[in-house]
Image (cartoon, rainbow over all chains, first blue to last red; front, side):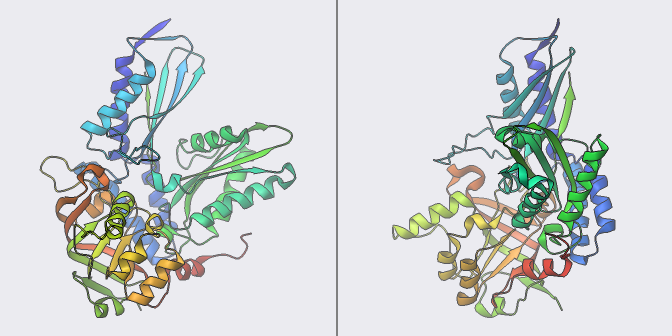
Length: 279
Length: 188
C-alpha cells in the first residue's frame, strides 16, 4: 500500500489551477494556429490572431487568459493501492482550489444559487473520483467557464431517433448557442449511460488532448462527421460568421438502457484549460 | 464598407447613429462595468426611486467581472461576459439614455427594439481575450456594491478598447448577417 499525504494533493491542485489559467496548452495553441490558417473570414482570422496574442500576454505578463477563471472541476483517478493519509482527501482538494484562486489572483466565481452571495474563495470544487488499478493518483484540474457551460444540454432521445437524432441534437445545441459561448468552441459529446452519466461523459470528452481523435476509428469517424456538420453552421469565431465554429468535436460513448438514448453536449469555449498531475 | 470610429463618452444620439454593424470602434475615456448582480441592484434602486451610483445618460456599460489585480497592476483579465443575461434589465437603462453596451453574444428582440427606439448600440468585444483587453484599461476603481466582489460596479478608464458594432440603431444584427454568409445548406 503506497501512502500519499493529502497535503501533496492540496499543493498539486493549487499549482494546477494557477497553471491552467495562465498557460494555454500546446494542444490548444496548435489548434488555434490551425484554425487561423483555415479560416476564410477576415474578421474570423483577426479573432484567431487576438486569441494567440491573448495567450502570449497571459503567459508572459501573468494575467489570466480569461477573467472567468472557472469553476474548478477536478477529475481524480485514484489507484486502489493508494492509502491517502493526513486528513480528508476532498477537503484537501477544496483547500488547493482555495489557495490557487487566492494566491494566483484568479476570479472567484462561485455563489449561492439563490441569494447569489459569492462563496469568496471559489470553493467548493466539483470532484469526480474513479478508483482504478495501480498505486498512483492522477488529478486533472479543469477550470470551467460559465458562459459555455450555460449553452450545454442533455437530451433523452427515443432509440428510434438513432445516429441521425444524435447528430441533429449536437448541431442544434451549437446553433442555438451561436456566439454566446465564445466560439471557436470545443464540443464534448456524451452518448449513452444514464441521464447524468451522459453529461459526465460529455465533460470528460473535453479533457482529451485537443486534435487527438478517439482511439476507436468508428467513433473517430463520427467525431469528424459532427465537426463538419457543426462548422457548416457558419457561426465562425465569436459568431461573426466564418468557417471555424468548432476546433474539435470529442466523443465518449457507453452502453445505455434498451429504452433510452441519452445524449449530452458540453460546450467548451476556446479557453480550454486543463492541467494534469500524477502523484 | 465598415469603418473605424473612436468613441469617447458621454455620447449623443448623433454619435451612435453614424455607426453600422461591422464597424470597428475604439472606446476611450470613462466607462462603467456591470453584470448580473449589479444590474439587479441598479433596477432595484430605480424601482425604489433612489439615485443610481453613476450617470447613465450618454454612458457606456461594459458587461465584465474582472479577475483581481496583482499588486502594482491596474486590473486582472477583463473580457466581456455573455450579454443575454442582462436582456431583461437593458431596455430600462437604454430608456434612461444609456448609449452603448459592450458584451458578447446575442441580444433579445426587446433589446434590439430599444436600441432602435432610443438610439443606442450594442458592441461586441472578443470573448475570452481577457488578458489582451486588460492592456487597454488604464485605471479601475470600485464605485458601488463592493460586496459583490467581481460583480461590483467599477469605473474604468480605457484607451482604445476594441469592439465591433453588433446591433446598430437601424435594428440590424451582425450575428445574423455574418453567419448567413458562411452557412452551408447541407446542414439539417
